[in-house]
Image (cartoon, rainbow over all chains, first blue to last red; front, side, top):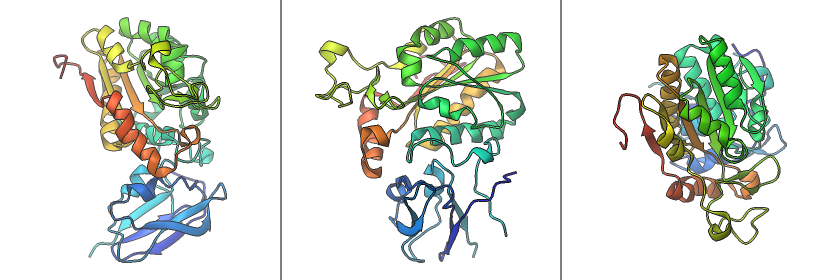
Length: 84
Length: 250
């Protein structure tokens, strides 16, 4: 298992819990472009290279599809769907 | 609750964040490879070979034995490993510079001998590590450091189509495909089939992955995806070119 602990920020959205590991995110922005509902924006938290990281704009729009997690080259995003 | 990132188990977590540039396609290809290794459960049998260029930054990427060689020689070195230890799963990882330019003879000869190794090649249309010079895969008219007016196909020829070349010279039993980092699920299936081809011992397996180089293309995220999805796929057709047990041309 992963023994290294990375810094992270979390945002509870309506349909999913969005976790971003700022200790892994390099701020490439690939996830922002791939998001089908364009719900990601630049965040004030800085990533591992001192670049802005990302965060969902609001709690409603994220559908929890997990495409951002799929296209992240650094595995910096974890989406956990909230079961209803 | 201590949260862990959703990395493939085969990745070596201590070396992450990895050394590739932000937005680099290598991370995506190696993520797909890591997930395939996890699913097949072959991590303890892997011999991972990386080539010179940006791809060598993956030398400590996996919790597996790794070897780094120069200029496309990863293929013959791993061929030797495979011949000496047939129980090992040998994965040669290289870029288009190492595989198609300076090391193409190794790729061609290993393919025509139908060696039982897997070659995974990242095609990003330039030489990334040395600063974005023109590579054999640079698209016609594409501007690079050494083709500032765009690639002139009259003087430098057309871009190399690796999988087409390899599928033409490999005998039956080989697996040849071209995937793209813009379609990771498909790429993962291709890599998995390539590894299964090696596990079954039917022949050479080769997967080219269209990859992004935002640093040297000087593109933002939007243009990066646009280039990988639209411009590269116009010339480099994505799909399987040769599948063991199937007729050619599918």
